Length: 317
Image 1: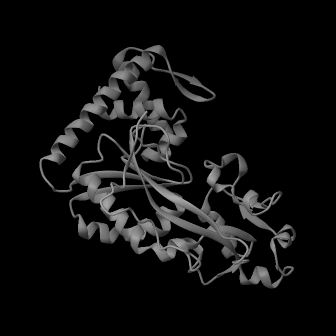
Image 2: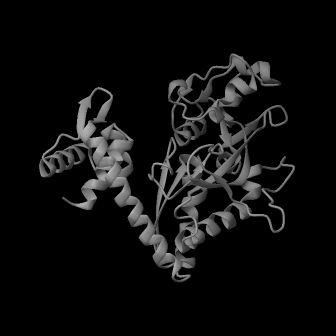
Image 3: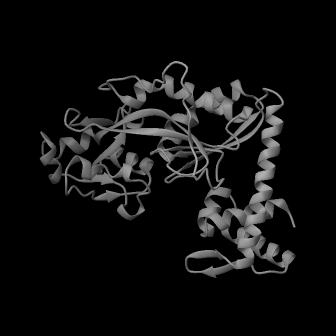
């Protein structure tokens, strides 16, 4: 029995669909299934029931999951102890981020991260969804809402703004837009309703009741590309579309939405050198990126903690 197989077992116990685990682990579902069956054979017990909903733990699987989580916690404690012996930031961090933010803001800053911390590696998990810190799918995660449960340290990174954007060619060939009611005569771009993973992404209901997108995708990057090719009008973050020369901001004085990014770190690792280094990197990056995040109509440049105040807040259940 190998620890890597136990880690994979834990991943499937937390996310029953093999396709989801494959997306996050980089392994294909066939390999994951084969390794799980090998683990079951090594232990001579059935760990999962294969159902239409995915892999569901059997009673024996639940018992093993409790013990495997204890091993996982022990490994985290060893890492915390090692980091506490000195200030050297080394090892590997897994950071979960929303897809657009990870692609447009954080990924371009990786060269700076590499220069500042040459012994620190980072897995940037940029998904159209969220990566769970309480379930140990990541060491830290940037979320659209402040988490209310779990053994977490949380703090607000920054507000950010969103506006309506469309390509010039689209606007030139469609009815003039002078106010929000005119949007009903246009092709809108947005999220697939039943795949929305956060209520913070339900933009159109906030702009006007009854607005329904014609073209939808769970990927904000795909929505951005739809707008760039002239398919319609999309609600996009300013940091993504504000500097795009292909796009025009539509109704900037009528429609400006504001949201926030929150950083969540597991309580067990928040004091380690590698976590502190990554947290410092994110704080510096968001501070520098204030104008890009908030846009020209922002009233404030970004989050400001009171002098001497601990920016992290315990969130323990």
